[in-house]
Length: 312
Ligand SMILES: NC(=O)c1ccc[n+]([C@@H]2O[C@H](COP(=O)([O-])OP(=O)(O)OC[C@H]3O[C@@H](n4cnc5c(N)ncnc54)[C@H](OP(=O)(O)O)[C@@H]3O)[C@@H](O)[C@H]2O)c1
Image (cartoon, rainbow, N blue to C red; front, side, top):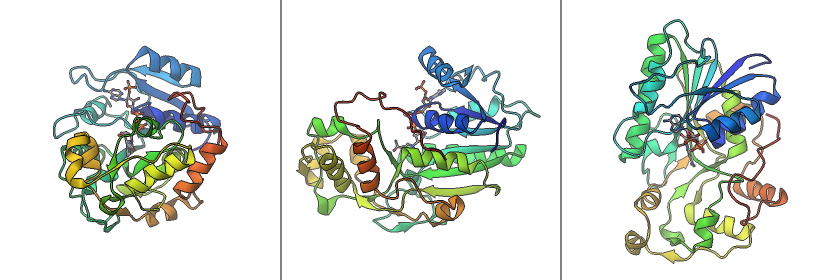
């Protein structure tokens, strides 16, 4: 995308704001759908045009999205319950015929692959996630794909692994001594630094293929326990206590348990080929060292960390 082109962000949260910062620095026009005054204020401060609306209002389509010919980054998650994603339907229903965007980039998750027993997963691997979380994501992907086919909109689906970086480290869990699974029982997972994900979102606007599906991770598979240990070591916090899988059900939240029940390694070859440039943070050690060097500390309240100033 080049100067003057329009980017619309639906789901103006952490990643949306990072993408907006990069896009504005490139001279793009950026508009964001927001549902609270606080988010509207943050958007205006950033130089982002505000469209007020709530994707939970199935009775009220969003009015005023400058979507015609634009690139849309859709970064709102599905709701917390059910088997489908009504929010994506409200978004699609808000686009008037003739006012279609050029492309929608959808932030999905690698959770749609489900538990793969540590196997390597690429974009041809069937999405067999069985949790309601996975079903909602798959529903969102398929609603968008069908709508895109019908309305002539290119859809790019990014299946994103766990996002880490300043403002997102699990300091509360570490400071609260929340347990993790013993290393030998801990599942394999991948990560991507939030600033790299933001660059990838913007780069994806220029990938010409339609119906694109791209796994997003830095390619380094680690156990979740190793991840928590590495964050603890980088910031001088105690390593989290270990529990066996058998004991975990009594001490972990259902959500945490479900994360600890899925093991897979994400192949990122397609991402590397598309991106053509190296990641800013090719592995966790690099991302952690950068955060420490930038002065991130566990005492720093969430949201107080400046957005990335790194250029895409
Ligand atoms: N956490 C991870 O490791 C991970 C991994 C893979 C993918 N993802 C997904 O990547 C996407 C972006 O992540 P993120 O960290 O930027 O998430 P985030 O900070 O939670 O931002 C999501 C944004 O969506 C907005 N939103 C939610 N419901 C909405 C509604 N009904 N109408 C309008 N806006 C709504 C939220 O608005 P409010 O501020 O008003 O709530 C929030 O600004 C999410 O879909 C996330 O689930 C996350």
